[in-house]
Image 1 (cartoon, helix red, strand yellow):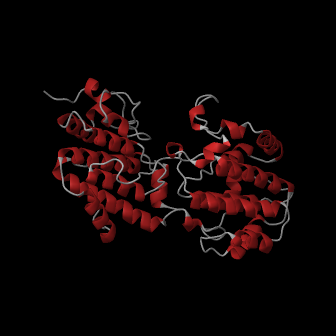
Image 2 (cartoon, rainbow, N blue to C red; image 1 turned 180 degrees about the vertical axis):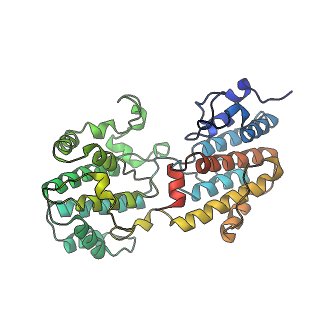
Image 3 (cartoon, helix red, strand yellow; image 1 turned 120 degrees about the horizontal axis):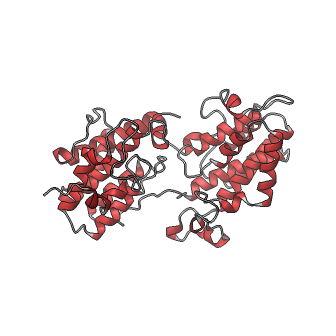
Length: 379
């Protein structure tokens, strides 16, 4: 008797492993992939995964925990490809704690330090401090080996001469960066930032829906700046959206900041300041900020993505078949690392590898403009 039915699917672990795809856990049995796509109940890959799961039941606890790590694969591309390697290592060792998998909203001290340096530059511009002076203050404690004198000069030139509207937007951006710097990013590990009291995750829902940041948005200074933006700047909603979307865990956060800084600098006295109109004039990546400090270049990302798909697909073999051919071009070094981390084959490991493979592929196939695809394909 086939296990492929609505009841079994809705009571499976497989169901919950595809958030931010058309087959996320909340999607019903009759749901279709896109307007004219197949219904979930007709999807061959999801059916294969469910049949694999029921063949190994009861699923070992270590495998349940790794399935959770597959579910938590960051949809924005954060931690790729290290997260994929960590999950593969845990699968290979049959131990969910063998390697630390990265989760959404997790940021290390290096990334936060870099954002803090950018905030100091912006604060210096607002206060009319000389760029060399600000750069020297950063360089005293700088460990990334960056040329802050050059970066400071780039930022100041990009922002241009002070202007009331520019200052207003930079001050609002500064408030956002300061919030990011004091917010908790790794609640499961008891991050030291918890001592500051900005524990926003448990407050989900208290502020009217998907808003982790109700505290920051209700801060008096932030509210005043946002109100002034709506009163004094054209297309205020687009400006506020861009500023509040500077997620520090995003792979391209430095490029986001670079775009915002350059867009602000394009505002001219007594002229329109429509965000989308000005954004089209922003220079290429890396001309103002060190964007390569926070994400791989698109060519490398694509090569490692294709290699990951190939390695996982080869491991799954004929037991789990994708509807499209596997990539031909691979990075040999990365392929050897992933293959070595997976180790021997077994039914439980095969199910987990197939889950991870389908998880990544669904990002690429289902959302051509979604975060993970943008991380892989372009700057």
